[in-house]
Image (cartoon, rainbow, N blue to C red):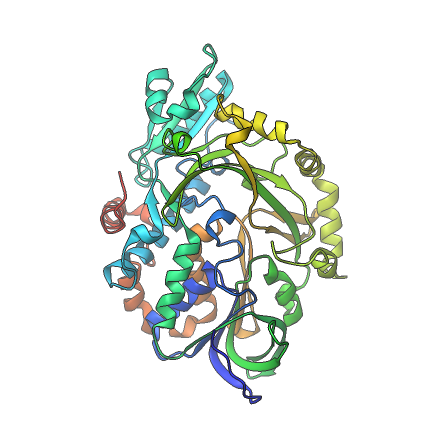
Length: 498
């Protein structure tokens, strides 16, 4: 941990708040583009990647819409809308390019340090869902971003793809699945540690762990005074920043509110906790090698789509099933029960009440989830793994997610389930709010931060950005040749399949 006992105010070009993958990604991008920037990262915990970026605090899916059915809704005319799936896949291709650049340039020794190829599957049962999945496959298979996807209703094929899921399954019910070999499992905790390691290996970077940012105040000239307290010893200090990024997960909203920027007015947050069932029994783990996503229950939020995942965390293989949603007033897993009530203000209470009024299905769903017994959770698992036994699975608590609530001129307020970048004060401050697809799209999200906050420097950075992300400024969906080149390069460099 880097410390500065001096009471004098230190000034940095960039202050990063939060020790997760978002801050780390932005820090590395900025140092690639302008190596002489002075950067300080403040994290409230004693190591990086201990909240949502931690390997076991998320499902580790490299979200590319290969398997996530909530990204391909059915239109009223019966056709499947793939527009969101295309956008999500495009974003993940940017992350793949960024990671490939770091591997090729020797800044990350091996992609296996954080990334493993795991096929992505969608799995449904029942005649109506089978028909939907067939339509979805038809809509996606000809798109250059989704080439290589297979569809089957054949029981023998399904047994090859997912033997654990098919074992002891009762015959007679229509089943269908899609399979894509190019899926990934990402240990975002390991990735974060390697990104921070890149920053620590160069001069001009300071890492301050065990330090909580308590306040942000404008200092004039679009600079910021940042008040920081050391959690071990209680020493307080102020630092000045020319640019501040608030990447503190659920803790970003309270700090954004303290900044006082007009763009923060009216924004609220709705925390949703999650739990998974985890299996590390090697005999069971060896029988499943895929991320298998199903359909969400009616009223369930998008991040609660049930899925059975192969995970590889620091060399340890395991299975996760879930998530089971819950409710907590904390904005961070290691946060305060007062986080939600403290975030309620006169400018956002109307939007929050409107969301409460309009989202009774979500409220009912959360109540049902909170009241579930251990047997209820196992029963849900048995829809995916009919032979599942309670003694082989343990319940673990995942990271906390805070969904964005915003004012709406028609409905008063809306609950958003994506991620949102909020910027203000002439581009001198930015915050990331929201959840899924989150960490998978850290690289494109941080490119958005660069565009909004460092627009004046982009012309001089453009050539370098294209070295890091060859598709920078181009939509891969509109350039099949470049799309094929990018997918093949990143597949080779990252040692992926398909």
